[in-house]
Length: 238
Image (cartoon, rainbow, N blue to C red):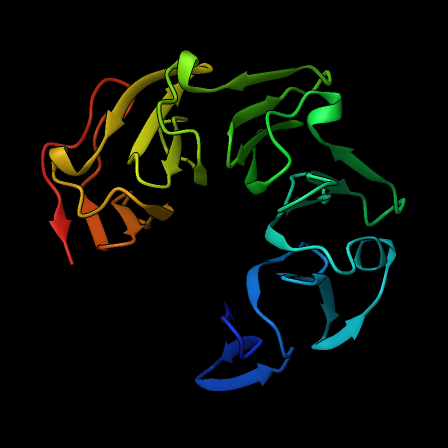
């Protein structure tokens, strides 16, 4: 297999069978994703770059996002690409098949235009984290949003993750993690509960369903637990 690395200013790195190769971009790579066709999509501070067999290619999306600060890219189950921009046009969905681009901003119901991250939780349903709250774009096009009054006390969403219990983890900038089930916030995890820090960059699980949480103060790990009905009893902090 291959491991792709996004770097601050050195571009994108690829590790294959012990060999390392850099693709120099000359700008910050904030995120990357590989689709089923093997294309690698890179979100940078100046738009989306696309690579096929390590060769840069252009398409409707790369042209559309030129000059835009892109914070996150992801791949949907149908092969469409999710692009989170830090200014209008906000959240994008691009179809490589048709070349069509959809955009969501505050003009059509999104909670904010500075988008940090977006993930597909079920087919066609997209959770969008912004600096001013969380929006859920339903498959039918309707949007439900969450701010302080809705229980999201820290509205600056840094990362999103759907765990093995189908619980959505919402990592924030200083407010720790909120857990959401059926579009309702059910619990919160902070440093008071043993988390090493409250600025949350990334959340994931390994093959044994252990949780790994990257924060601004270090990394926290916890064993599998019933996230639908509680929070971890302890953390191993690195």
